[in-house]
Length: 165
Image 1: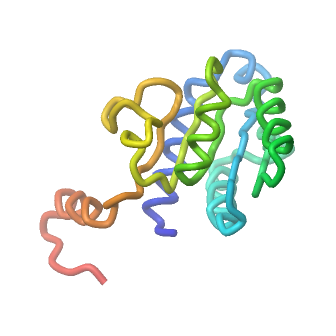
Image 2: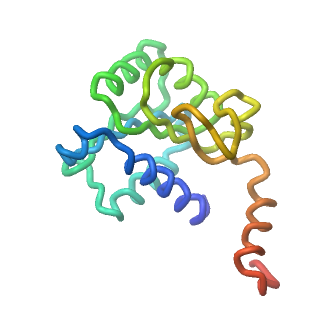
């Protein structure tokens, strides 16, 4: 996973936390749900957690995780949804289009922000209304064509750039 990608995820998360509910700010404990529908995504979770820890968000201190990795049976996913809604999670982090869509279907009527990663076409899949204005409580990073657009962005930021290794 690239460093720019990790930084983008952390920035999205911090943006979401800046709008957290009043009760959380008073208790100084943030509740974060993590739903990873594939076991291969363990590195993504570790990068996410390490990024938060590096910015002072520490588990068992000012941060509580509710995690579901590789859900298995439907009742396991139902239990996860019940826990994040009962505890009024501040944000849920997920990856993959199927994982984000499953959350969207189950969180209808809830106002829990969801940050997604590794989603190829968030608009076409129905996760967000548009890339510029996602609407609702879902936002994240589109992974489709990210490489080419990343180079265009990099060239705008550093116009003198001639070579990338």
